[in-house]
Amino acid sequence: MKFRLSEFNTTRYSRGADAARVDITEDDGDQHWLWMSPRDIEKNVMLFGPHLGFLQAAARYSMKPQRLVKQWREKGDKRFLQPVKPARSEHGYWRHPDWPDEESDRVMTDWLNIIGYEIACGWMDGDKDAESILERCYGNGDIDILEWQPKQPEGEGWFIVSIHDHEDGPVCIWLRDKGSAA
Image (cartoon, rainbow, N blue to C red; front, side):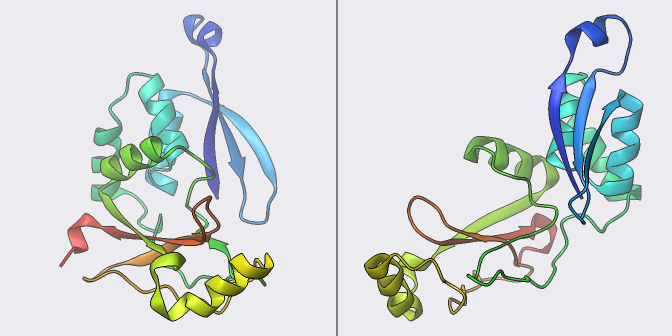
């Protein structure tokens, strides 16, 4: 599931009503939204993990996202942002089910720091084993990168969260929990 803060309604907040509108996308693609209170945010972080949308809503409520992450790490459901085998598309692209949709690099870096993950990027352009795939992509406009097998960064605990096209070419995003860094 994905959770995205779509609105924080200050009028509702000033009247004491739930003010954080969170859009929810189920794993099967169904979408809906809920107004959430600070208590709802806290409860959902424990159940589903510190998704970016929840932590953004918490910050708008003047809650400390770091406190929520600490509580989640101590007592919450640990299925959030765990390694899964990438089910790449017919063209070779993939995104982890818990990885947020398009956000700025700054937002993502801040979020990953708060939740305690480190990030590494592997570019197809710098992968000597992928030169023929890259040549085909740039030479013919072919978007098929399924043959590309991104190289894992050095150290233990890395897993893929996204293989996607970027303005600088295909990239693989790797994460690991800072606690598992070797």
